[in-house]
Image (cartoon, rainbow, N blue to C red; front, top):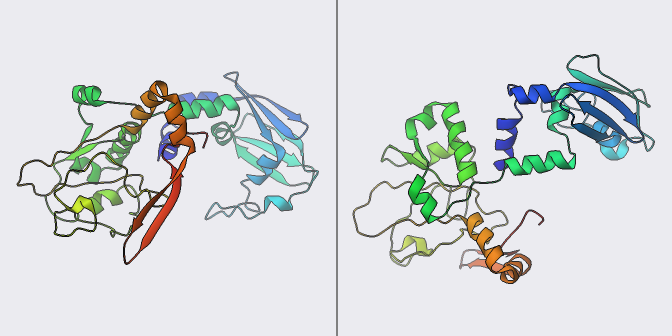
Length: 299
């Protein structure tokens, strides 16, 4: 989600800063790559093989699905750009030494620049806002109206931007009827099914298959670590509540890891490097996955 949010919010063509930075100042043809000099003094280097592999023409890319039709391994070994031109229009045009022609929208090139400073800027933009109990108490959980999310794509967009950055949100005035979790989830994307089903009810039952289905206290935890890809988002809907207790506790794992790395660097490294087995063993299924407790960007 974080990546898609970054792309849509900061690389859209309606962003005036993007329009300015997409103005080409000069083009260079160098051995095995092309250099684009932009008006804002930024410089992008695009390797010939990368450009040809991403050629958007109808021979190289299906016009309907936008998927590639050519295998990069089949490109000529001596492939290189013969000429690169820009007539102050909307595209950068390349004539290749095998007579193939490619036209790249300049906004697309700037958005996909892979120079180190561009990549670092993208990662910096995606850094989440960290919080702890004090900050959460002062600010409160970011809250959104159910009707706004259900009736407006802009409402969904604003909600997901905050959710991506903050990691926790509250939707208020949700109807107290079954099926609302699925409706809200479908406003984002398809819902992934797990061993507990597509949608499940968290209620206290005798002899539960999961401690969540009991009246016992649950300490802070990460769900479904025995999956190769644990759920990225979980939606919980309180429909009825007629007892005491039942408070919900939330912890920002990024904030915990930040402090933990400073206070106990050796233990942090251990939890980062040591692989452990997570498992869920029952008569009808056995699931396990091996991973470290902490993952960093370098992993």
